[in-house]
Structure formats: structure tokens, C-alpha cells
Image 1: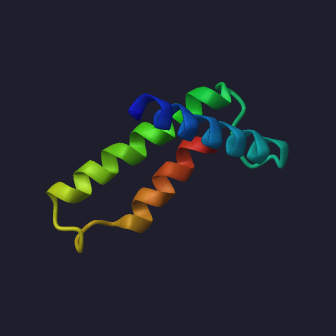
Image 2: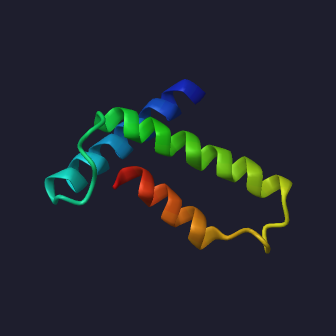
Image 3: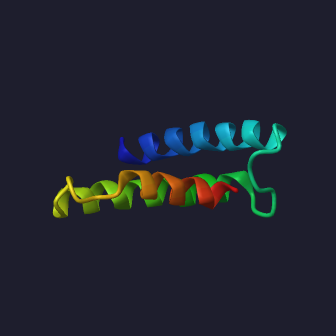
Length: 72
């Protein structure tokens, strides 16, 4: 079940990245699926980290900018 959910999320992210590329917003030097996997792993890691630290001190804006930086 977890593997299927992971694959579903990667498919959704890949499609979004491909749409962003068509608009000229996302990088094209790496395969869309590779970027999707990197973004998914980053997000999962940040969720785990948020549970371990004081969420009030976490810079969610900075994390979002970093994640978007992965794509551009």
C-alpha cells in the first residue's frame, strides 16, 4: 500500500513538473521524474524533522523557497 501511494504521488508531481516546464517555469536539465522523487523525499524529510523540532521555530517560508529552488 505504501509503495502504491509513493508511486501515485510521484506521478502527480511528475505531471505538475511537466506542466511547469511547458510554461517555462521549471528546469529541464534533469528528468521530471527525478525532480519529482527529489521533491517528494525532501517533503517527507521535512515532515519528519518538523515532528522532532519546535514547529513554531521552523522557517516554513524558507523551506518552501528551498523546495521551489529544486525545480528552477
